[in-house]
Structures are given as structure tokens and as C-alpha cells.
Length: 466
Image 1 (tube, rainbow, N blue to C red):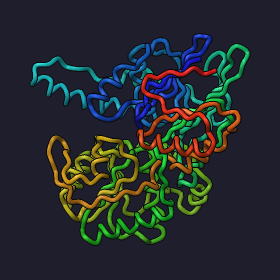
Image 2 (cartoon, rainbow, N blue to C red; image 1 turned 135 degrees about the vertical axis):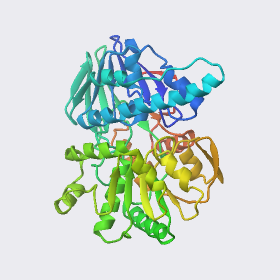
Image 3 (tube, rainbow, N blue to C red; image 1 turned 120 degrees about the vertical axis):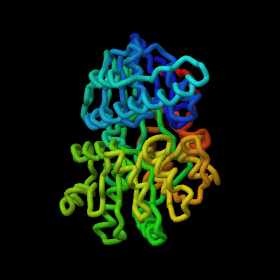
Image 4 (cartoon, one colour; image 1 turned 90 degrees about the vertical axis):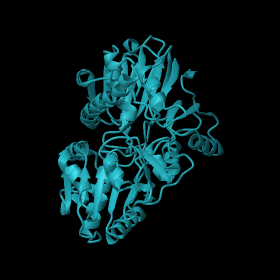
């Protein structure tokens, strides 16, 4: 058997790992969109590195675009196999993939205007709504803990990864020439003790493990401390008459921030200012959350006995209409605006940043990981000048970072997941989905703890699984 890493190798995006079995079956673990510099993204997202028509099965860990966002492209290029995912992942993917197709369309319109002025041929979008509809028709939904066989010689079990709604780790039991081999894939792992979702469930013992490494070498602050900081940031910004702008992914991060504000509201620790969730996708995703209480942790279920709607409170408004979104920029009163995207690379949050970034009363609160070369990372680094919509703006707003709300486990959380494995059985750990410095730090920690074979694959690198 051969395992090849076609994405999320020495980077944090574009998860794609190809497993080729001795019986000829080809299984793809995730099929994510690469997000980063436009030139790099163009190359990575248009060239799979393999023939999509030869893929028999996709095993999808969760619905985030960097793990699922190339599925419609896979379908457009000839894939007609099955995609296995949890029920909640299917519901979220139905929202996110159509939204991604819309973004592709708008992005290509912008690029083609520039190419037209240069006398260059137009380019096509990666995929459209028809491709999304096609791939959604290939999904098969499965439940946590129930073994299933996606193809001959393979049995798979999904466990709750605690990352976003519906996220899963997976263990593949492979029959190879009379031998049984177990390959594990963490997908993205959530932090133990995070609100809303259950803690990551233990994975079965593996011979080989593919693990994410986003926060290798780092430790998050506690959720209670983070909520106290959030309350202080809201109050401080309101007192100086400014806007608190929170770039947040529509799925997971937005709901977690809203839930924290809901708790603060019930505890009477929020000033009486309006809070807006300005993202149609986040509005729809919140509806999906409410439809899947089976994914909630015990704390949230108990909380809902007194507050049946943890994603809604007095002074909170969800915005769909673009005119209402624009109106927020014409208002100079204090407010909180939660808007996508989390890395500040697209969406309505760019308009809010453009209109408020040079106002020293403004606070920009970053609540998750921002990849290199994104606007979000430039804000985290507090560059004195940043470019938005092709124009330069001086950063005069206050920038605050709270990593406790990240959907990714820190190093202790990752070590807890891997620590449940049998060291005497585990032959090799592959580290993916991490910046090189984070992966190197995590590798060093694993080696110190007695894991003797830890590898950080390069893009396109293959390994024999025996």
C-alpha cells in the first residue's frame, strides 16, 4: 500500500492524502481547497497530482473548506465514487460548498476583468453550482462509532474530533495479503473542554497515524479566562465609542463567540450595545447547529435548560441583507460586529475593516489561526500598513488576539489524543496541517516522549504502508 500527501504538507491548508491499496482501490482522505497566495492557490487547486476518475472513495473528516472545498472540482474532473461523512458534516458541506462556488464565480469575474485589460484569455472558475449539486449527490452519511466498509478490504470507524460540528477522526482497518493494518487520521482535532461541542473521543489503536499539528509547541489560554478578556474588550471598546470587529469563520467560531456573549449577557457583564452577526452563511450555519444537538456537550445541554437559545440574546441581530450590512458602516455608535471570513481574505468583514481600521477607537479581535500571507496574519503581526481591496490603509485600530477560541487543539490537546495510542504498536506518525515551525516543535515533543518515528512529509511525497 502507498500513502501520498498531496495537500496540507508543510502548510496548514488544502488537506488531501491519497491511499492506494494492493487491490487497486484508491481512497482519498479529505479533498481541501488550498488557501494562500493567489499564484500558489491557482497551481495547487487546479492540479490534483492524480487522476480524479481513478478515485473510488473519499473519506471526509469535516466540512471546512480547506478539507472539503475541492470536492466539487473533483466531481467536475470526473470523480463518480462515494463521499463518506457524518450527518452534520453533510449538512454543513451543503452550505459551505455552494458558498464557495459563489466565491469562485466572483473571484473569476474580478480576475478576468484584469486579464481582459491585459489582452489575456479568460479563466474558468474551479467549479459552479452544478458541480456542487453533483458532488452532494455522491455523499453517504454515517454515524459516529458505527463501522462501515467503503470498499473491499477496508473498514472505517469515525469518532468525534471535537473540532467543528460533525468533525471526525477516523481509523481505517486495511486487509493486505493476510495482514491487518490500521491507519488513523485525526483530521483536525478540537481542544478538550471547549464549549458547545464534546471533547475529542479516543481513537482505536493504530499502526500508522496522520496527525494535524497546527498549534505544535503552543498552549492556549483557558476558556474562562478568555471569556473574561472578551468582556473586558467589549467594555473597553464601548467606553471609547468604537466598534469591536471580530473576523470569524461562519461555522464554529461564530457560534462559539455568540455563545460566550450570550453567557456574558446572562451574567450581566455586557454593556448595552448592539451585537451583529453579519454573515448570511453564519446565519444558516447557526440553524444547522440547532438541528444537531446530538453533537453538543453536556455543559451546553444543561445550559439550554435555562436558556433554550444559546445563540440568541437581547441586542443580538443576525444580518442577511447586504443593505443592512452596509448601514453598519454608516453608523458611528459603539457596536460589536462578527463577520466572515476568519482570516480576513474575503466576505463582508473586509468592508468593515476598510471603513474602521484607521479609527483608533476601533478594536479588531482575532480569535483563530491566520495563515501566512493572509490579511488576518498581517493584522496579528500589527503591520503599520495593510492593503484592502487594492488600497493601502494605516493600522490605527487596536488589535487583540485570543487563541482560546481556536477550533484546533494546542500541543497538550494533541498530545492527549496521540497519547492514547499504543507506542509499541504505532510504527510511524505523519505530521500534516501545520506551518513548518509548528510541525518541527511538535515533532521534537513527540520524540522526547518516546515516539521513535515521526515524519513531516513534503508535498507529493509517498510512503509504503506495510
